[in-house]
Length: 348
Image (cartoon, rainbow, N blue to C red):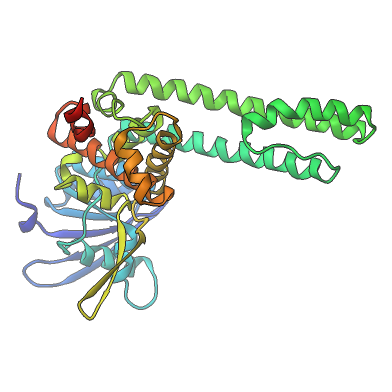
């Protein structure tokens, strides 16, 4: 395969129906801007000379990346927030395609890995589960607000609410505290909440099936604090872990490192940068928080909590989980409990 450094670059601005191309002739420097309809895009690249096709990473980019790769071209997906810096003047399709063309030739911008159909399907399951979770939270919060207006205070937490609400409704009916038609409507909403939970459980079973078919997901599931959701989302979202030079860079990509502010030769470390995939970072931090909530903590965690704030310890543990996942998948090694807690192992 020809080196990407010697290939002509095509900036492609994706759309629903009409796509914009930005092409610069490598010899004459002539700029070509053209629009192509969706039905003609694959035909154009089938006849085009082998090129480096650059696109913003978005909802349809992985599909078109696989299609264009199959036609013999190389593809570079660029983070949209990094492309934005190269947009000049007014925002139009032509200017967007030009910005993509310029950004594709910047060596410091790390491209996004092209996902396989299986990886996209796995992330789609996560997306549907998250949507159901948000809807369920909206429904339970609405119940809390409605019943609070009648003097009924429900506990926080989904499971605690479901355990308490039937007793509260029964007591309120005995005391003539709630109208009968409102009680019926509340019961109907509880059925909707139960139905959403059933749908979430079904998606969880499908994700478990995906894990059973994927050795990488099974490998990082051995890390303490990494469950089904975290293991499947990490592997599906990242793909090739070896694209990161170190576990430190992987943790930085996830936004689990301090944000730095430097001027006049002095550097100040602030809170975590929160860059990268918010969902992956949330899963890792949730797993770390669950580990710290256990009564039986390791000596390493105990010492960490003695000298750092609780939330700092949570992020530090999430950082360690991410770096361990990188080591397992980038280097192809098994999880080693001795390396996870080296000081404890040395004393036992």
